[in-house]
Length: 146
Image (cartoon, rainbow, N blue to C red):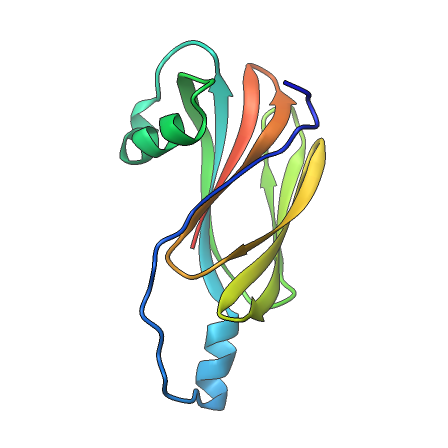
């Protein structure tokens, strides 16, 4: 696998839409999103660690070339439009998650990590995987969960 090759996979969950017009405070709140970012190291051998038990089947389905998945860290933050969060990744680098705002009911993020970057669109209550960069002991996967 090419080190700069990005594996982009989305598993989206449908959510009901509100038809009420938001107030100014509600509109501002809608522009914010709580996101959990799991930093995962995937490898060709081993098994998912206990911290990933709840998402192990999803990881194995999305990344069948790997059998070992180890959680490096997990971070939960609330980001408003234009705000970003830096997250440490194995090997001494950082990933940066920047919330670009909401468009057509989907949150837009710029995701940068050692070896690449991409933009992601995802509705609330969904999961998206970004991966592919080589890190010590395997391949980096970022699991974004809104």
